[in-house]
Length: 121
Image 1 (cartoon, rainbow, N blue to C red):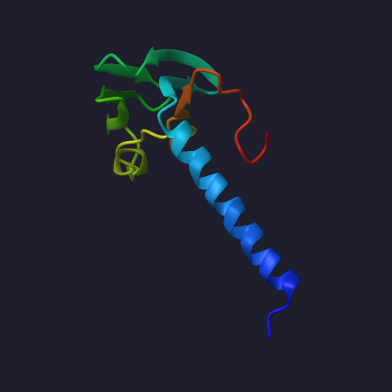
Image 2: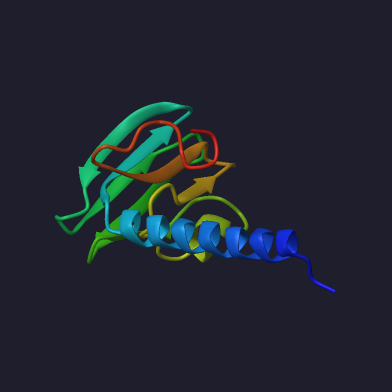
């Protein structure tokens, strides 16, 4: 049998879930910048508003990155399994594509976004 406190707990969890969902939907459009790092050093910072192709040189060779329709993907990479290519398009805040063999990471950030995300911040 449900007690008054059980019902309050359920309602509280539902409200917290809906608030979290609203925040996630609100911040989903806040992405406006792609940041590419090689060995932890930033090599490219580009706005998502402008479509384009970028070539990034890593330890294994050249990696091709595309921005199109405010989304980012890796077209080609010199690594063996090409998991970074298989990741496909990213477009949400804090999504990342990583090519471990080539030491390249691609992340999305936006205006007002700090280095902390919703979990750590």
